[in-house]
Length: 369
Ligand SMILES: Cc1cc2nc3c(=O)[nH]c(=O)nc-3n(C[C@H](O)[C@H](O)[C@H](O)COP(=O)(O)O)c2cc1C
Image (tube, rainbow, N blue to C red; front, side):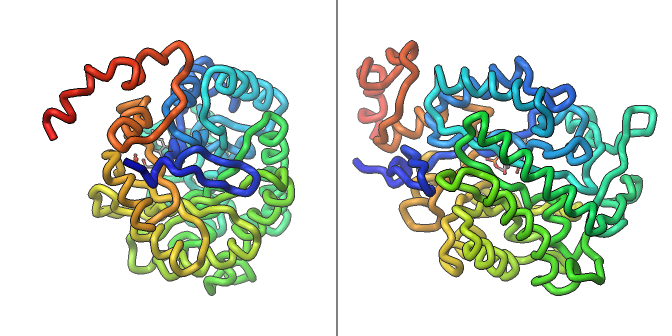
């Protein structure tokens, strides 16, 4: 039995042993952007999950770019040192390649963590001034952002560049730029949030300009042997928003700039109903892969190993990312390996749990088949 999901894949100079990715997941477990003991537990565990690649949560490149006051950041020496310590442990005990998602929350910053409601902070709770392509709140009752001028855009680019250098220094092997879900770069891309009349608004070419500038700057600041990918929306699920044709056009521009992969997600630029079902966003990854030639990562309600396998084997995407699947089963990669006949590295102290070490316990499967 050979598995496409367990075929290695090379992204620039980084070889991943399989195509399973832990999708970035905000933990809201930081003070002043620093990694905490929770990160040691959470990332430590997921670095032993069987996934070839673990992408750390959306990490603020500057304080005002955090979603909440509890978000992870990478703008200070203290942030860099605290995260570096956690990563050292992940590398010592785990096997996943470690990447990070760098982001800026734009007009959706300065809110409470989702488990405290996800609503905008009040001034007395440390609310801050948010920035965006246009001074339009996400919804009634949300902060009205300041429109970024050229100097402000340069500050954001400089913050991405600094964070990329810090990521490189602490040994992160991959950067994913967050341009999805209605955060700053997604806001520039989407006509729902971007009403500018300068060279950064209006046509798709103009709306892509700032995200592409950020991509180019991060690419130039990060080790040339290490991949830089990006996550963006295949659709805003809104008739006036971004759609799959826009995603393909953006991917073509990114490919020309040396982008290593695109992860296709959706939503977040407006409060819309998303038609959820297993693999509901895979079609966007497939279109971008086919029409732009950029390698893609599919994400969204992929839970069963057989579905992940089909996505890769049928050429719908090059990699598969799971978020909630890994919260539910932190060793999901082990189960996938057992069900699909793949090989993974077990942490040495857990080696006795490998199916090959107690095969009788897995006989029910062949008996039931
Ligand atoms: C707890 C949690 C935190 C998340 N944080 C992020 C994030 O930091 N960046 C991001 O791009 N997506 C984030 N997402 C979205 C996931 O990465 C993923 O795209 C989404 O959950 C769909 O995949 P799933 O069905 O496998 O969970 C988060 C999802 C969850 C459940």
